[in-house]
Length: 306
Figure 1 (cartoon, rainbow, N blue to C red):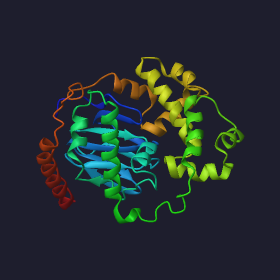
Figure 2: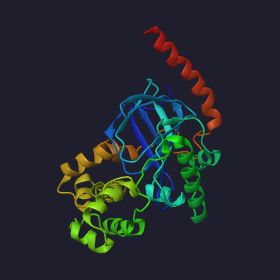
Figure 3: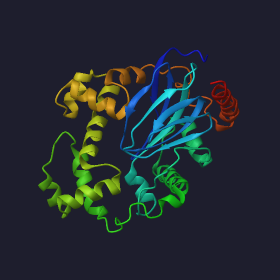
Figure 4: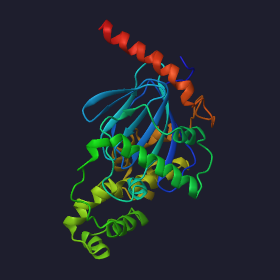
């Protein structure tokens, strides 16, 4: 055992516009099925991470990375009694698209990969160091290129027909929603600010930003709620601040996006366990690889015994 009590523990590091970094540990608890509107690119540091993604059970061992596409349903649970720990980037699809100079968003068919740029592991290891403007660009470019490389041949043709997507016009819709997500704008307002009809907005918004306008608004409301929760405000107050009808409305949406209720998420953020409160946390890929090999052999033995 690693000495941690049961539960989820989350710690957010320094981020930048479009990039969020987090360290997490789960022992004896699981994330409920959920989906978020960002790319999730994380590395397992210890234990076995199991999750269901696109109808299949997956295992991610120490030193391995997982890549989840925006708006794809998934869960997450420890594969052993020891639990597991990981560090992760959450990246705005718009930033990925910008780094790639347009075109379809990369889709990685196999979510568990072993090779990613060492600079990304180093960036997660130094979780609390600020990301300046240049660092943000470098990290975004490294992530975008890695996503495109792992998408490979299957990326060809994906998103065909969106070459003419009016990115700047859609960005005006996106910015309007993000400026005050508590406000529900009529579709006519989106048509006016973008110069596009409602059907084009609905089709191309998802192609460019990875989710629908409605879902994008909900996630920005949840950003407001998360900030309130991290500031120590109770869920009922967070719900009001974010424009949800009531606390139960917030709870349904929150669990559907993060796999935990607001109260459990708030507790997890406020109780960083061993490893999470140290910027360096033994998060070196070099240290994780021998553990991956040991646990891989253990998983094979378990399967053979069944």
